[in-house]
Length: 86
Image (cartoon, rainbow, N blue to C red; front, side, top):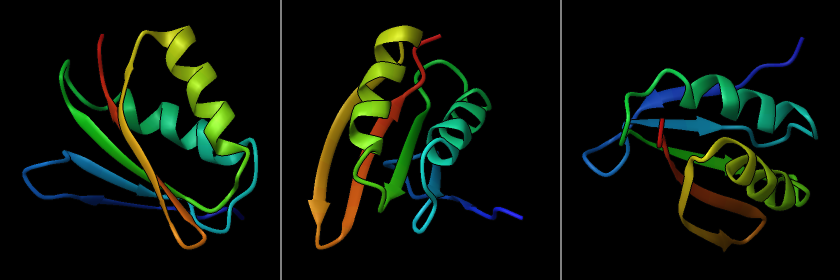
């Protein structure tokens, strides 16, 4: 069974999704599920360790119209801030 963590974040993010240790396509599938729970303008912080998530995320936002506000790397973790734009 695949597990992932979703927590309520601070004032900067409405939700935080931790997909560390999960491989493609699970992280992007969970991103799609969690961002759909947010209202327009809601922000989701995704933390991933799968390097392929970078490409998956960029394709996802292009196809859905959501926004990628920021992304960065710290060690072996990748961080992405997405905004629901629906």
